[in-house]
Length: 152
Image (cartoon, rainbow, N blue to C red; front, side, top):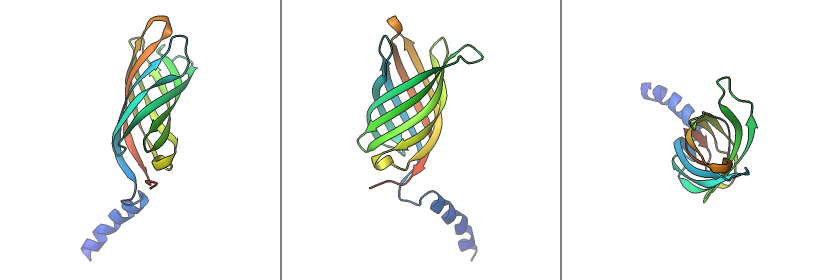
């Protein structure tokens, strides 16, 4: 009886997380992207490992926000990751220092395909190389915890 009583909380946790069917756990996403001179959408590639194992292209659209109290640049970013198993749309507010260090917190907004009901959030860290005429090269990592059913 003691074993059954000990299993009840674990079974409740598994049920709340969707059981064994689905995507659950930590994930790490690395990306390389480019903002062309003169502005426009940011395009690039990504690779996700961990609970999500996929790769493909990315598209970032952004809106410049007022500078932070420290004078750093800020932007609201909507990132679309187009992989083999579907699309994940992520939103985050990005802060970029004058040296190019970028940071923020991300959250999954929606998904399609295998990612249709995926939820999650985590931390964003990256670096922006400022190029001539306003162009930028961006390298970043997004790490966090995700969960949701795997739509097969």
